[in-house]
Image (cartoon, rainbow, N blue to C red; front, side, top):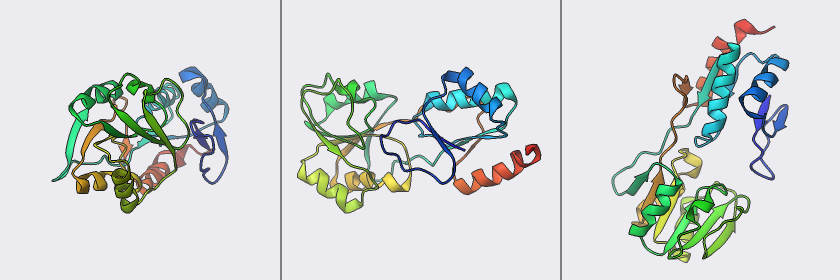
Length: 223
């Protein structure tokens, strides 16, 4: 059973049964796991979905169900990268004071409101679905779904005369082209660090490793 949060209007659905929407906090998730006789939980949410990860860990622990957190590797700053690392969205907005006017914002539609007070900057906001208000005073909205190629990102940055990229360290090869493009173009990047995983979380970085874990953790519990 795959569970999607429902953040995207038209998500790409995985194979098999799918439910969409929240559970109603830890208590709701705990009840759902119990009623559906779930034997193992794999938290494969976005690296910035901290609340979901926390709820999954707590609910599974309460019921004595094994839980795994699948997290793709972070991007690592390399030679030629001009990164300013910040802990959260508010810090990212404050960091823009040190950079030029044209900002490429690739943080998804949630959290754009943190930049609503940045009146000096003009934002190119790229997301799959339109963000809700509040929005920055000056912006252009690009609704697009990746992955984007290296050439796509270079053209975008050149066409909009981007001075700085703001993004989350979500990791993953499919979204890394913008990092390569910023490095090539000599553009600074305001990089938002990931929130920490729950204490004691068991983690893997590859889907294959998660499948191996399932064989070990869940098979003895199959009814």
